[in-house]
Length: 283
Image (tube, rainbow, N blue to C red; front, side, top):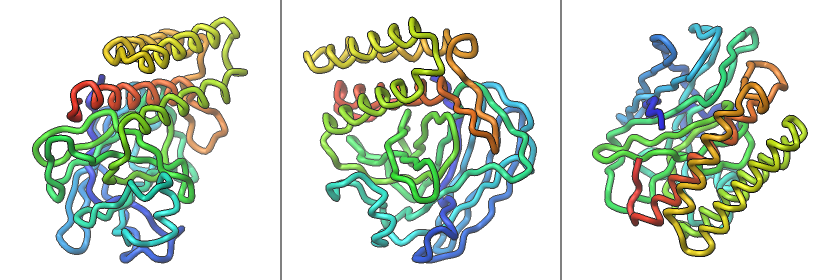
């Protein structure tokens, strides 16, 4: 698992939601090779580092993406409505930040595979069995979903893979891990079903069998077996990427990076399975 880090503390939310306590703040980007980093400094002394890393990228320059961050109101009903139902996921008061990453109107950015985004902040302490997670939404009004692929000890560094861009937040997720795992299995299934027409039937059938096998192992109580099966699923998607599974994201295009979405989904599912197996978040 690549650990490409996207350090971040206050990230963009912005104009889509009036109740935000502070205006959206553009972030100054630094580009080195296939990685973008930015420092977040918001009112109240909230600071963080954001990093985005690509496996393969074309058109990466300061004008390709807009990065911004803003303080949000943790009690704002319009924001809470974008979290999973049940009231067990919340925005931490010590780090009420929303980051937005979106292509500029003139962007020619494209990347293949998975992009890794992470946020690093000292505003949140890392504890055993920490409920902190990285969530993403597909757009400024979409529902947030868990994308966590790693959660590192010390000051919090959270992140994961993504096949596209959107809004990002760190939240406290106190839902039962089995609920989270079931949701993630369903999410990977939804991605596979939705984009089945873009892949050869034999490839779809093989991935479907691999996913079903992983779910069956999990339901039978073989967590280590399920983890191995999910890893194998992700590796098969990577193997078939490009030739049989669309794996390119293009800014300002309707092209879908199916392989990136499947691999990111498998990665965050593996994370939650590992949490259940070890009772602590692991990279």
